[in-house]
Image: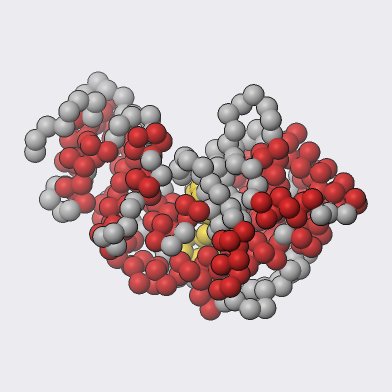
Amino acid sequence: MTLTTRSLSLVLLLVFAAVAAPGCLAHANASLEPPSSAPRPQFDFHSGFWINLHHFLYEEAASQDVGPRTPRHEPLSMADGTIAADLSPDEQQVWSSAIAYYKAHLLERDLLTNDAMRSIKNRLEDLESAATLGRSRLDPGLAGVLDRAAPVYRAHWWREHDRANHAWINAVSPLIDQHGKVLSEELSAAFGASWPGRPIRVDVVAYANWAGAYTTLLPARITISSVDSRNQQIAALEVLFHEASHTLIEGVGDTLIRDFAARKKSAPRDLWHALLFFTVGFYVQRIYPDYVPYADSNDLWERGFSSPFHEVLAADWQPHLEGEKSLAQAISDLAADFGVPPKEH
C-alpha cells in the first residue's frame, strides 16, 4: 500500500476504548457486533482473533529482527511492549517460542506478495475466532504454535486490540455511509471498471504490514491496522478506498503498459500505484477541502516513489478526474509526457 513509518500509542488505544462498544469479551469465541460494524454496500468489516494473533506475532518477530536487511517494521508500541515484560515465566516461554517460530519460518515471507502467506491469511480470516486450529487445514507446525500462543494473547492483548478494532470501525463507518456511494461511483468511472458486486471484506487488525494496510486479490480482501496513526479520521476513508481501488486498476495498468510500449518506453514501476494515491486523494479532498491527501501528508511524492510523478499526474490525469478528458486520452498523455516536462494541453 504505502511506505513511511507507523506508530501505535497508548493514547490512541485509550481513545478507541472510550468509544468502543460495551461488552467486548476477551475470549476467542467472543462475538462483538456493534451496530456500526454491519456490512455496508462497499465493505464488510471483521475483527477476528486468529488473524490478529498472526499479524501480532509477525510484528513481534519483525520488531526483534536485527539482521542486515532493511527493517520493514517499527518496534512495538510502548503499551504492547510493556505488557510483554509482565508475562509469567511459563507465558514468556510460550510467547518467545512462538516469536522464534515466526522468525525462523515466516518473517522472510512478505505478507502481501508471498503466495503461502496470502493463503495463511485468508484461512485465518475465515476461521474468525474459532476455539482451536486443530482442524484448520493449516500447516500443523504453524497451527500448533498459534494454538499454544492463543491463551497468552487472549489474556494480555486481545481485549484491547479487539476494542481498538471495533472503535476504528465505528469511527469510519459514518464516513462510508455519507460518502461511500459517491466515492465508489467516482472511482469506478475514473478507472473504467465496475465496483465489486459484493462488499469487500476488511479484516481490521492492530498490526497490518509495514504500510499499515494491504490488499490481496482473488478474492479481494483488505487488511488494515486500526491503530496506525496514518489510518485515522478522514485518512481512514482515503486508505479504505485506496485499498479497494486495487480491484479497479488492472485495466488501466494494462493500457499504460501498452501505450508506453507503443512509444518504446517502459512504464515506471510505481506509476499505477501513484495513480491510485493521486485519484483517491483527489476525490476525498474534493469532499473535505481542508484535508491533506495521504501521499502529501506522508511525503510519498518526494520520498516514497521511484520517480517524480505528481507534476505529470496533475497535468495529464487530473483533467480526466475533473471530467475534461477521456480515460484513453489521459493514459495516452501520461505515456507521451512521462519523463519530460509536461506539455500544455
